Image: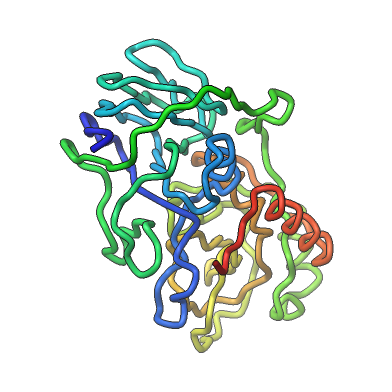
Length: 304
């Protein structure tokens, strides 16, 4: 026993790095939406990179501590409080038994992560603790649930240096790696795609993000469904992009202009509807260099 759920919020689920080895069976990748905030939360607690956290979307959550615990909250500013008093994020904090943790409404960003020393000890389902509501794997937080983890304490204060704190209010440019279908699009179609600022639509969840903007005129030929990857940018029959996210299906039948660089998808995870989004091309070698640097810093071993 570690936390009792007093208020579950709009959408709060346990997530880890993801369910990476079951795509061949039609199962989504799942896992945290904002890999950057998740990785920092575990890093600041000296956890394993894959320790499970609580992903809180839009706030409205209240938890009561049933043990003394060392915690860290990273990600969106949702007005995090301990016993009614504003508390810092992006640093580890020692809390006491009976403390009440709460998150109100979004101030900057929409998703935040509660990590505990050693991670949450929820059931492992198909190699991961990640909840996927679309596939009926686990359930979201409910009132009176108890989230299990080990009691913990710590003396060393670890925190994110302020100059590295992300700014969730900035418009973002998503770097795109061209897919094998990239050359199917004409020069005029590509120019329209890269020159405009799209807006995040209301159809935006853990499965995917639809964008609003000037549509690309494309032929509405039928395609045979094929394998999809996290970050794939489909151009739907209405000519507008859909970015596939963590709980997306593993196959689809729209043309794909490319795949968003994985680390940029963490920025998209913090955007509310009507936020502006642009695309720009990225070189595969630069993507590999940045991905390797990130993985080495956080000691990420996705195949372990």
